[in-house]
Length: 162
Image 1 (tube, rainbow, N blue to C red):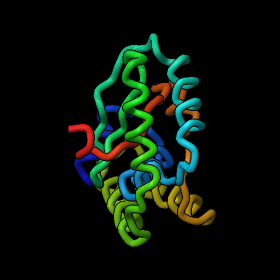
Image 2: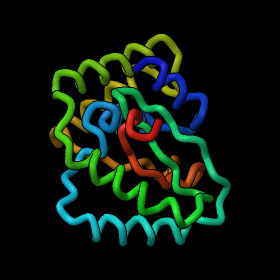
Image 3: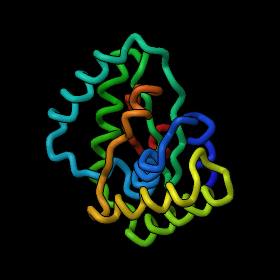
């Protein structure tokens, strides 16, 4: 997980603690939500792809835990069905544990205290406490992250794509 967190810092230097919490959640739990309707997921994927299809493509991002973020920017439309299938499959598999998630959050805070991240341990601790006050759940990227990186990806199992 440390390598995935360090890679995030290098790849997205404007990431905030909340963005790391999202990465850690996805690393532990995958997409993090049941997708009962593959058609609905497909529609959302195609709608999002329409907004980013002309942006430069990005390499898959290994987020640890056996998952990757598979970017949909700049990809050919013919890839969308496969991506939707991989995403729905990953989303409907139960993985991870609360204790594993908490250990990864502790690692992030420790890394911040070692000055390995673009924020300090106090900021990391505050973000974790605020997040946990609402329970362990999927979260969103920050506005700063959106404005700098226009994230457009699906979390899928790494071993399925190799």
